[in-house]
Amino acid sequence: MKSFTPDPTRSTDLRRALGQFGTGVALITAQTGEGPLGMTANSFSSVSLDPPLVLWSAARSSKRHDAFAAASAFCIHVLSADQIDVANHFAAQGHDFSPYAVEEGPNGAPTLHGCLATFHCDTYAVHRAGDHSIILGQITAAATQPEERDGLLFKRGRFGRFTPDP
Ligand SMILES: Cc1cc2nc3c(=O)[nH]c(=O)nc-3n(C[C@H](O)[C@H](O)[C@H](O)COP(=O)(O)O)c2cc1C
Image 1 (cartoon, helix red, strand yellow):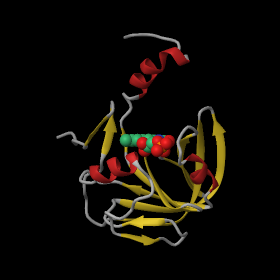
Image 2 (cartoon, protein in one colour; image 1 turned 90 degrees about the vertical axis):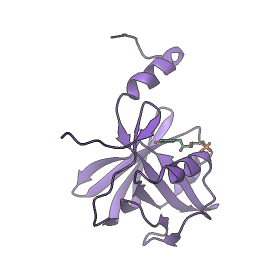
Image 3 (spheres, protein in one colour; image 1 turned 90 degrees about the horizontal axis):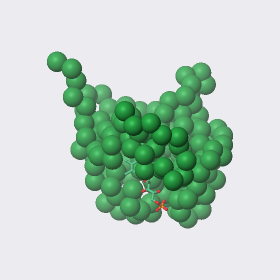
Image 4 (cartoon, helix red, strand yellow; image 1 turned 60 degrees about the horizontal axis):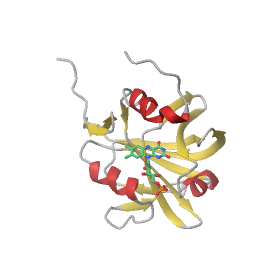
């Protein structure tokens, strides 16, 4: 076990340690002053059931940060294991939705078809937190796929899928 004290010169070590924690992968979308915007994010987390709150965190260094932080609503899409292309597409850029079937969600955010679950949120609070902003949303509508499908997972910088214990 390699021990270290987190500091900016050890960000690689800290990233490696944090990368041991596997997550799902989400696409966050919002309707913004610059049009529809998307971003791949693995910082999504549920927060509260009553009221129903979720969060994700956006890097302040991102070109898309200010538009997401200012948006009054957003949509979280839980990606399936066969949507790596969606994750890579919206990691690379945020404005081109042309490859995908999209409709306007109840809160105005672009909503992709075929995801495992979608959570339509009104922005509840935005908290500055170091080099990120924590964006909290109150879920106003949600949808989930009726059939069981594998989710897209992310761990140690790689995509993968869940293998249940036998
Ligand atoms: C699996 C994965 C998870 C990511 N999670 C986040 C995240 O939670 N927050 C974030 O700000 N960026 C996250 N990113 C990075 C953004 O998707 C995107 O690549 C980055 O914002 C690009 O910089 P730009 O917005 O300046 O174009 C993630 C990227 C990948 C591939």
